[in-house]
Image (tube, rainbow over the protein chains, first blue to last red):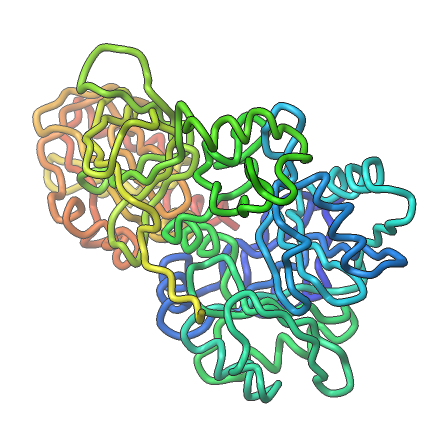
Amino acid sequence: MADLLRTPVHGLHLRLGARMVPFAGYEMPVQYPMGVMKEHLYCRAAAGWFDVSHMGQVILSAPGGAAEAAAALEALVPVDLAGLAEGRQRYALFTDAAGGILDDLMVTNKGDHLLLVVNAACKAADIAHLRAHLPDGVTVTEQADRALFALQGPGAEAALAALVPGVETMRFMDHREALWRGVTLWLSRSGYTGEDGFEISVPADRAETLAEALLAQDGVAAIGLGARDSLRLEAGLCLYGHDIDTTTSPVEADLAWAIQKARRAGGARAGGFPGAERILRELAEGPVRRRMGLRPEGRAPMREGTAIFDAPEGGAPIGTVTSGGFGPSVEAPVAMAYLPAGLAPGATVWGEVRGKRLPATVAALPFHPARYKR
Amino acid sequence: MKYTEDHEWLRVEGDLVVVGITEHASEQLGDVVFVELPEEGRGVSKGDEIVVIESVKAASDILAPLDGEIVAVNGDLADNPALVNEDPTGAAWFFKMKVADLAALDGYMDEAAYKALIG
């Protein structure tokens, strides 16, 4: 796998017996010897450690601190960042002029600056986008010398607290810095599995030591990208490049909850982000199509690209599956698709799998209830 | 036992050929979550896609290794697809076929040749 980048814990993945695959320009573990299904269930029952160091960690700093950086960044996202308190994190979206989505990201107010976490496949474009559109006073710095881990599942709190006492008091989307063996960790109570858990940024040269200390805790196992995908799918969370991209708007993607009142019509800072015209119109009038859950009947998964119809035969497709597979905790196939907005949970549609139309029921998301510590 | 380059094993049972996938294939596929089997009585030609295996990762096909007729399919796989991971060369056989010419099996690899193929 020449030309692929490696994360700071590449050697650890190999020692753990991971099967490595190319992902977003990196050589990443898709699974460990436990296998995708057991890793998924293990994370929901105990705790999973994930290496997500391929994701971009970016600091936005400005002479006026986080407030100035937040005010500037609001020009690129339909999100209330002025209202994001110090030590808090919020989900955001970079939108384009047509109201499509360039990437989704996490934004944290760290007092004197903002910390952004962006998708690996988008990070170069995101950084260029920030540099091109933010005012000169805002500095964009990629934190390429830090690794990023996720620790997810009902056992995550106890496992991390054994190394870093006090994290028990953090609530969902809280952020803090903490010292561990003389090194500063950036901790967020967040993740991508629907479980309680943490995301942990650590300097690259201490990443392996920290990973080993976490894995040494009872009830913590390494989890690969395969299970990360089935966990997030059951949790109803979007994967950029699949469920959201420049052809989908935040409202179509059912992410209107990420657009706070301050940025909506009548809000204190209404509009003022790329694609505001379309996005505000869709907020007011409703979108034509919307991302929804699908529960295929039977056991055959409906994977990405599966065409969806409103009848068992004839007619044109009414939508397409954007993510689909088997949900190990749901014990059945699950999928997400863009479908006419008028469809409600309980409606029957048909997905064409290998030339045969198989019935599926429109379902509310998530498929597996979230267990965040609010 | 004979082996195909598509990682199927073929075992002669009387005048029938029993077909499944190898341990190596089952490991590569990962956890199997769905198996679609052909209808009993179906006539097949070598190379026809006759079984679909869906794992947590992807869908893959099993091809008919020989010309013939499907005379039995393993219904246990519909209820318990995980058998393909648990016992790929035993309980998780996919189908039994009556073939026109058992001698056509000679064209496939023996165990030593298959082991060399998968390294």
